[in-house]
Length: 275
Image (tube, rainbow, N blue to C red; front, side, top):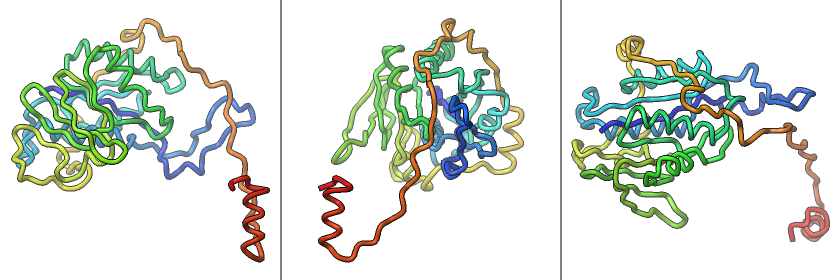
């Protein structure tokens, strides 16, 4: 099985209090923020690795995992980390975030899929910076492939994937024929969430994503990493979504102490308008 995994570098959500908006209100100033892989994309990579191995011998890749990111040269650090954990090859589309929107990323990914011809595209359900949750759905539409979103479990079958989708009130099981697009949720990295046909169902993975040992980190420096140009993938690079301005949320007002319950109810009803 060949799997394409998309990765995005995002500002560490734990540093959200450091986000600044300049007086021009035309952008978000990310100076001083720490960068990390989008967590849901890390889960997608872990799912792809599990689908292309026997869990009992994870150093042997029974298939191919190709990772791709859209970003400047420094995003290659994210790709090298993915290669260290087990991915075979990496692709970087040279572009900056302000030149992208979800539709352009989806159209570019379609071109990459047409070239690479993977059996499955595995993606995080959304990126934690924009939270738009749209690229996977757009890609499936452009490819005309079946899709399963919010995957909590994946079990490989002959020519198909049995996917447990997180829905209100539980998990819905859907079977998608390959090739297909799957977007994953956080439960996909539980010990019994993903099984290839080679991994015994009695086997349990460690909870969470795997980490690379030092020898793997060194070996990743020699794995193929190819740079692509955005214009090669999407001749029309015009954005459909343009942000006109940014502004910080209003500062929270100081709390008010009330002397008794009747006053609290009165304020909730007449001032907060929540009753």
